[in-house]
Length: 60
Image (tube, rainbow, N blue to C red):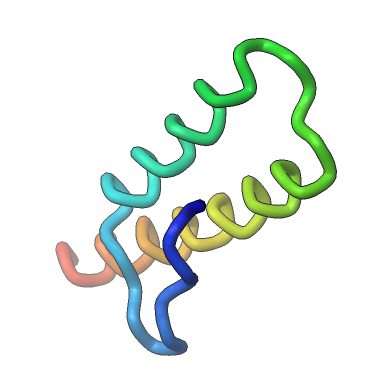
């Protein structure tokens, strides 16, 4: 089972979140996501966007 989401205000790196997305996708083996997997993917996608935004802000 994937780890619990980070507490509010805590952001994992985009690379770490991307690894979780890849693992989720590989687990599906080309079949459509289940409802649970789709919800997990959407949460990871949102977390990835937040991580990328933070990394861009820190780099600027």
